Length: 315
Image 1: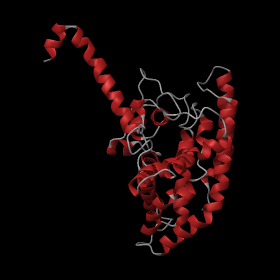
Image 2: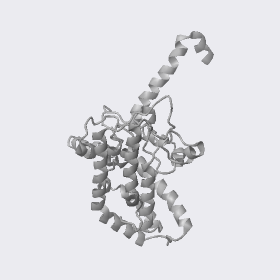
Image 3: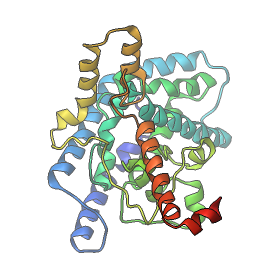
Image 4: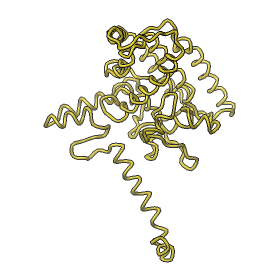
């Protein structure tokens, strides 16, 4: 959807300059950033492809949003300051649930996984965007805002602001910000956790701009100095094929659906958590985390078992 004021278009030159600057500073030893030419190229191509895909689906998205607004419950003026405050919070809450859904249900994970497919974490990673989000229908989650009465242009502008904000948090150069900022806003530290594949960090910190939603809904996990983030997905792709990055999970879904034996299996492969399988032979995030917690508990119990005196004190 095209807004009269498009934050993403205006910010694109800044994105490119910031990436180049981070690369230069990293080469000079003044910034903490790992870049790999082929990996960065995939991120840039994914960003370009996402823009093209967005243009192709923009008409359908605009028509649906306009229809919802025509059947609105209230008239909300774009000139009202309170309306901008309201849509800031409501759009950010919508983003949180969109982002959480995109991790917890395979159908939508298939369109989001490419954003997590890089094993590096730098500003170029922010441009590694989906080619299939429009087809997956994730934009439907924003229709209630139009139905409430927020003008389509207002929604598009706020979505753009959120996307621009999230660019700068894709960096290892900024470690932690002052505590009040870390408590309220999504920061590089919080978003590094989101991109990490460590069992402790899996499926955490879904925030767009405000981290308060994760704190409220129980999905917040702080970054720990004693456990550095390892980036990528549970099973990394191992190559730099941009088409594989864009479509590998969709191909995986198709292959699974070809061998289903019941409607339940089909629904599980489509809408179960990523990694779901009928016999439990694959691992979901919940299974990975459960096994990790069991190992941690076993490890914590070993010193007490080795020292009978210490064990008796804990009884």
